[in-house]
Length: 131
Image 1 (tube, rainbow, N blue to C red):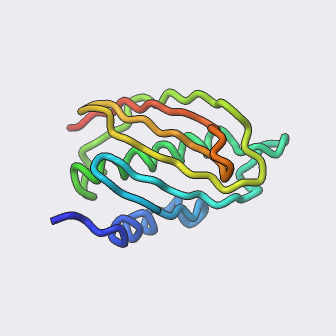
Image 2 (spheres, one colour):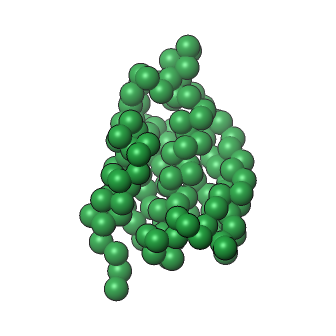
């Protein structure tokens, strides 16, 4: 039985880091998820751009939920991100962000993060291991 969008949101809301990031799952599909992160000046650099560590965290969470659409929400104990390779394309300033994650194959996923004007902010490839 497919998992409802609200169940994914309930799961993300239970993640301790989400009390700070306030992530919202917008879409789910087979091997795909789209997540919104509201703008928060706390997560910017001294140049007022989104901090790279926060972008990588968003990519990590987005990949997890894309994989969960295929494997179920109980994968957290059986799947590990082994490598996250992120290219920072453009700075994001004072904008909410949207992350789209796709599972590529049984060990790789990708996440693209864009701003409200569809400008590409970062692109990540994730290599993961299933226990």
